[in-house]
Length: 393
Image (cartoon, rainbow, N blue to C red; front, side, top):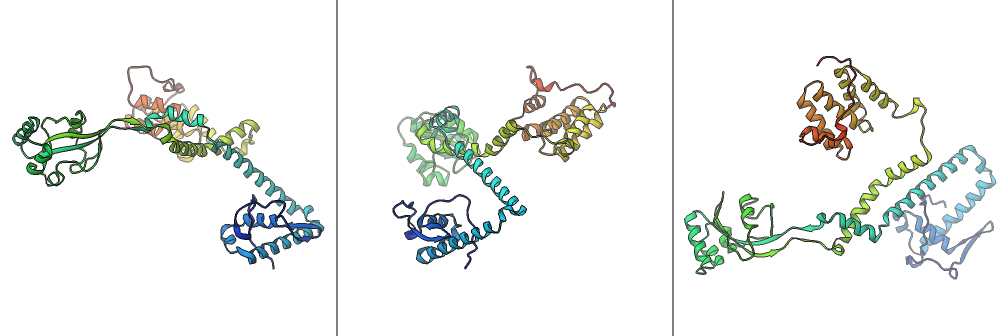
């Protein structure tokens, strides 16, 4: 019986008996059957089993599964020998398929090897990344705050004076005299550690609250201050100072982040290196960038600013993602600003450059043109002057 399952590309040794996952040794690599002089061994059965898709492998455990795998290998060996005797290796279609399979396997193996190399991050690389990104692993100062909240300044002033003089405990005052039900219930203690600029339970992210409490030292009682909720008196009960996560605590995060970044760049970097090493040349009529390049060159040579603008806009619309897109976008903004006096349109174009191509050299020029300073503009701002013959705006 022929069992039509798909074989995986890369084998691994796994004993079916007991499914322990251990490799066979030479001592127990028994010959199970000989087909035309070729032995099929225990390790060959185990290796074939390991190559199978998980769903098929799950149904082939135990002695009966082992027998089916062995039968499959016998059938495969018989068919292989029959194909050789029939001269199928010389059949043009078969030979082409074999060449294609060989190319595919080698290509995947090459990329897998590069992927394995990239995945290996040295301790030195991890520490260098940590040292250059310490701000990402900083822990901001956080506070536990107790606060009184009442409806009038007079009442707040009176209570604060008593607290500062030691005549009244702030916790007791929050419980007995606060006008806010949650403050009363919790004796004034905010329900979580708070961080500057983050919303606070009970009344959200009020700037005045953060301005006051983050200037206090632990145990210090604030002056009376007002928000939209009423009049407050606050005290810092506990503090966790600002700190930086130590390297060992951040190590797993750094490894995951570096691996993800490297994997994301793997294929483009590999292809760029291979293109540089071996070269890629297209006949003009087959060059995939010939059309966009001709359009860009036509736009550069066009004397009319309006026609030049239309050509750049056509390039951006029809060839999104090409290497000319950012230059075309920048030139759209430049023409609108310098030649057609359309400040709003120029701003939209420059903002697209900044937002869509933040790492481009032209992004710095676009930022300067959006909010020029007294300093020298980036060199890229000085775009090549347009041809002498122009339409009037």
